[in-house]
Length: 323
Image (tube, rainbow, N blue to C red; front, side, top):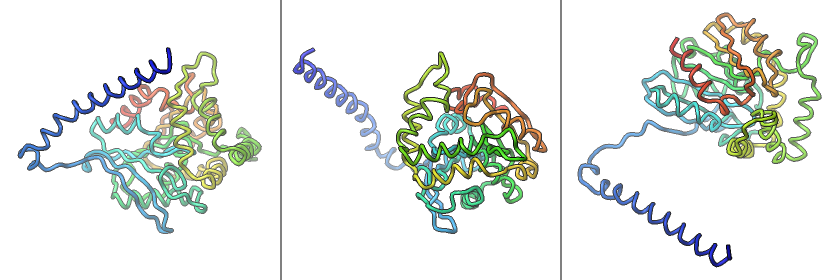
């Protein structure tokens, strides 16, 4: 096709889109102009905002749904943001729940902190958020690093704040290989993460979702470029210093005391082909430590299974919430 024909075609497409938009907007404009529409009060159940922590950090959060409904709080993985929970937030919002998700400090739209990027402070930030929203009887769902944050918070939460906890592909009890955890990953693995982040964070944040995170490196995998691009977008929104520090937080924190302390039902969900957080040294150990635990594993599913298979994960979450 010639350049002139291409330009003509683009012009027609642009004009068509403009006409379609105008046609769609016209009824809305007429409706807004009527006295009934103008007099009718508008209310929104979907809100977002910031809560300020004791050290002055701004934590971004979304708070959608009826404020009288049971809250579900979602904790995202490294180095992502609350946007990683879109498939779950919308699903449970439409089921009538109140859904909340925040960007961990240094991640997403929250302050790009250079300090406090460790689990004790992450949990304190969640306490600030739950106090600010006065959340009671909440279900906390954490993926990967967020699973560590969720259980660390639940072990410190005020009575009545937490009803249930879900750990999806989560890092507890501890990822690092130690004398007490001989099946863990050697420190060199996490040093490699740090080196790759320092060398070229933008490329590293392509390599992870294109490969092991979603299992797109497996033969026959159905690759979603949208998921890859969205992972990269979320990661690059956060701060390099916070992301660097968080590698130590998610790999070296020992969540064993937290798992033992939490006295509410805990559902542990893990993909059997998780290449980021191997199941043998995470879910299979964590289930032995919790008081009221249920383990559900998924043959062939990857670390990011809540995004690659939301229809499977959401259905199981809903069943646990209602149980």
